[in-house]
Amino acid sequence: MTEFRPQLIYWQFDHGGQNGFADIVLPAEFSHLKSRFWNEPWADRIGLGSVSTREREKHFARFEPLNGAQPKPLAMRYHGHQFQHYNEDLGDGRGFLFAQAQDPIDLRLLDFGTKGSGQTPYSRAGDGRLTLKGAFREALATEMLESLGVNTSKTFCFFETGERLQRNDEPSPTRAAVLTRLSHGHIRFGTFERLAHLRESDRLRQLVAYSARNYFPALDPDNGVLFFCVFLERTARLTAQWMMAGFVHGVLNTDNMNVTGESFDYGPWRFLPTYRPEFTAAYFDHAGLYAYGRQPSAVYWNLDRLALALSTAYDTTSLRAELVRFPDHFQREVLACFFERMGLELPVDLGQAEELFVAGMQLLATTQKPFEDLFFDWYAGRSERAAHWTAATEWQRLLAAMTPCAQSLARLAGGYYRGESPETMLIEEVESLWSEIDRNDNWQPFYDKVARLREKGRGHGFGA
Picture 1 (cartoon, rainbow, N blue to C red):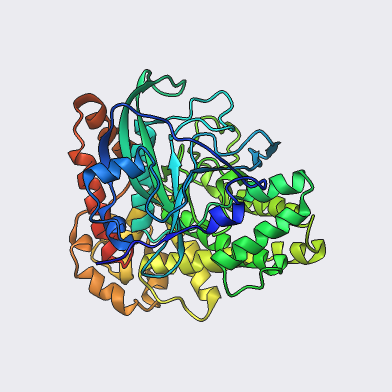
Picture 2 (tube, rainbow, N blue to C red; picture 1 turned 90 degrees about the vertical axis):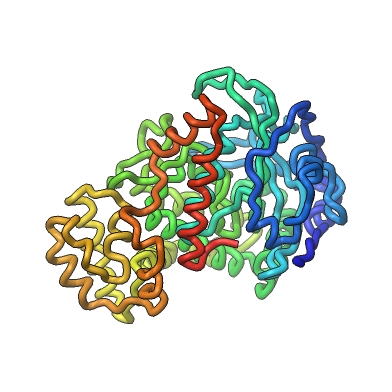
């Protein structure tokens, strides 16, 4: 049986919230709780698979401390650029760091972070709550992204709380929930921006050293430039994964990005129906700042803000020299991700790889066929679904010169690729699943969808 391994790392570093990085907070009290989602694969992996229903509620809805973990929740302090405008009135307003643990499998640090767990000093005028639909949507986003191999947080669990919330962007009153996510880090870009804004360069160095020791232990904790280089590369990888998943984050603000290069905190996300670079996820993104095709430039801009913050404590010239390498990192990573999704070996000649990539994107743009169909119909170079496509002659010629990965040929014989269509997560599907919950309290279609996504992920080597 896997052993749960709690840690006190951030609690000890922050000295209980007294030295300027976080604040001790109290969780909200909920009178009526109903478990709606429990991530059994990840619970089993980290040693919490055998906890009783009562213990789940005790620790992940009432947030009584886990044995050996930090004694009280911590709300993070941070600033950030929101739609490229600086905002110092930020921080964890409806969540906190509840606990940390060590993953028994890969030994990495895992954070339990919450959403909808009550008001904090940073709630501003908010109620600190989360809608049930928001929790449901976050679970779908993380399950879909995990099934595609994207470096994402995991939705660990959520409970319906029995409260009725007023919201301006959905029919109200609406049902409420409290959610716990698992991630490999909680330090946001905006955390460093806050310290730079306050001109606390010594504390900024402390935070870099903490992050390096716990997330990148091979690094010199005093080398902020090398630290920036490593998570720049990881961020390039994440951005490429988003693009090849057809994922549109929606709110790529600096407070929604972290130093481990992990996707988290899902709001108005969408997946592409067809290849359209101008496609946006957030109804309030009128200028299309965070449109699908502009995500790489938005991430680059955020990294520029981070480099500017770090330059208050480290060499500016060296940081800028690393920053300008981002486009090259991203280009290599997007080709690697494309070939991974296609089940093909990445050619040594990256020019040849780019030719196939461009042809694939052009085919999607020309035909306006569903985005996921390219990776499903042509996986490992198979041709039996070619009849579904038109204008694919050049694509087929280039594809024929590529080599399938050995494991991708085995996957073709599996259940997923024997189906009639790929698993997708379009807005119509999301709304249909939610309608069953909202109108009939029928959660089975949601659970069935999660099960299918996990089966797909396991078939490709992804998941707990």
